[in-house]
Image 1: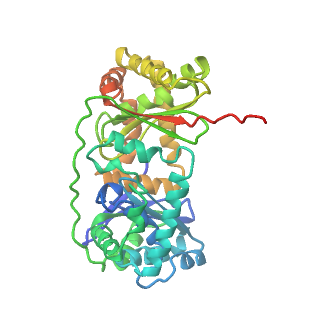
Image 2: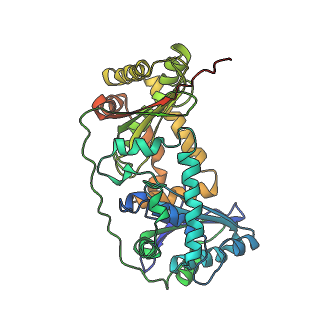
Image 3: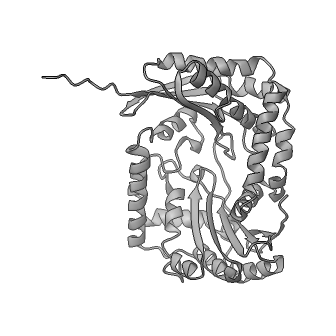
Length: 419
């Protein structure tokens, strides 16, 4: 159980406070309600670019890292299709430094052509290194647009193509900042050895004077239901053939989300899962295989991915996956198997609450979903899933007509001929 209090500033900034006086540390987690789904299709990768730009100096602070390091703090950030999240931790007695740093870059970044060019090069290099020049690195660049035809989830967080970042202009960058980086589009969680009164005073002092900005209203096209299988074949210089299968699933706040999450666990979480037991250990079709969910706020994906053993036919391996999925759609799962994954899921929830930073992040995300107290309801929702829920959801989600399959072929190497 994570205890918290909350308030909202006049400019719209939502603030959640979690007191933990057993720790000498404090955490500031600032979640901006912007991800790659909020980009225009002609200008993708900007949410991720801003993750970098936010560390390039702000209106009154040339260097973000130096003041934080001087008071014993550290920081980082991440971007997803749904959010951009910045966080820092530092000794609790230095908490005001964190407020000063985060409020200043919310107020205004120190936009400069040189700063933009530096961060643009960093992101372009990341795009090349992690997505273009790494084995299987381009999977999401191919699988997302196969699974999504209308929704902006169809491009990866890094961007749709590298030219969008290379061609980013200062005007477009500034417009993106004004649209999304405002108090009314953010959630601040402060956790650790702090008091509610202290946080409220500091929030009013440092964030209160920042103009609310124009409220961003999200207007995103809904993805139409998929009615037939989609298959894409690609060939690259990779060690092994691989299969990636994406099934549309309910949104994060949907009542069936946890049932589908548990389906993915039974299918492919760990070495005792159905896919691993049958296709790796018994039939020896795959070298490795797993299943997971994207966890997207809007309608997301259940993903099955596996690398085949040498000499195994891709079509045979794909049919073997579909056969196991078919079992889920035809009969109730055993209570023992379901309880096992329920307990595993609840263990993950419990462990996620050990670290102070994780608690802060979970509170911020739950608040974004509509209620900070959702963080305390996850275990209950997991345990409420029944075998009947699993069967009903499996029939809908694992339907082959709801599946997009990427067959990733390894290039055949020509054997060297001795002279």
